[in-house]
Image (tube, rainbow, N blue to C red; front, top):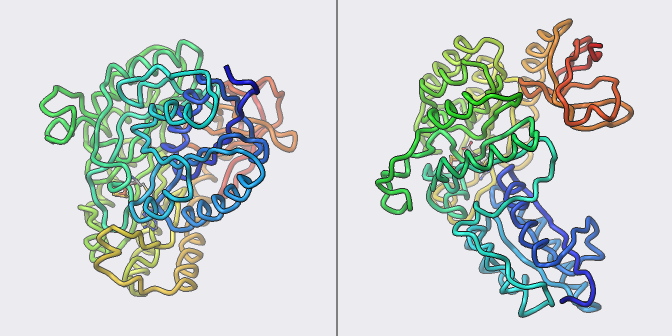
Length: 439
Ligand code: SAH
Ligand code: SF4
């Protein structure tokens, strides 16, 4: 038995998948006797769930580990690096961190810790890390991973190198996790994967444990969950436009548990750039799909990811993206400046030719377009009723998201947090809605 309660602190950056992975890491740490702290200064163990998508995130980790190694001069501290890490960074950081583990091997953490810190004992290992029961951050909404890895190899992207090939999680395991959540009264489930639309397709991949197995398609998986009884919302991220099937659109159009929200990353509005990015679609085919979705699911809100200043992007090519944004009328867009990632083919083949300040200008330019289209979309909610899943309270106002993933604020009691509440919208802006609770 440990003589004093050991404390852990987690530093998590990046996407929802990392947040979800951190919830599984917490289960392991708690099961061997650690308690959580939100203060780095009092931690005996610090774990990093890293993101390799942009250099900025990695730079933060390099800064942090320098500080943590200084702490070690005055007291014991164990550090772990896991999550998405490129080989290039692994080679540099293996001398700085005490433990380096891929997320898929995270069950090995207890044995690694036992030789360094007095822990309670061994964690009961699961066959795959996704079988570890997560310590969910929220009591009413949860992320549920349905697959790991990515086979798309977009030329700029680190993910296929850090997460490996696509492996779908068995449908029964996903259903069991969701049913347990729903039985506990959870109100919102978000299915996670780098490219959820290719769920099940790895049964044709010799590298996958699912090779030759009978697997459900993503549309079939959704259809099943969508048919369940209960009062809950279902979301998913992220969809690659190439695999966005008609079957999937039909299930979404049923509008039952599946919310009217779709994240459909376009990355660029120029066909030569899309080809250079290895995205498998053209601007025309993307827009055709988007308009089809909007026609079949009127009122759906659509967000996207865009990269500005990708290797060699000219002004004219950039303006094509601006034009696409005006046509697509997104109500949310996550605009990123291109960041070359060592080991990716874009890093190897192309020069990062667009200067930093020009990337910034392009980002700002697109954000201005977004502001206009988002404002226009949100205005449609004026004087309408909308249901909100209340997330929290800030400045005496409750806030939460509606089915369209819009942030809604209204006055109400704290006890409504975690509940669905009907609100009449009074004011709208590009980034959210304000209304009154219906009595
Ligand atoms: N699987 C998801 C994306 C995961 S990465 C998808 O395909 O939609 C999230 C976003 O980060 C990407 O959509 C892209 O816009 C951005 N991104 C990825 N690599 C990047 C890079 N090297 N530089 C800048 N942005 C990048
Ligand atoms: Fe990266 Fe492309 Fe895979 Fe998304 S689909 S994770 S951007 S390689």
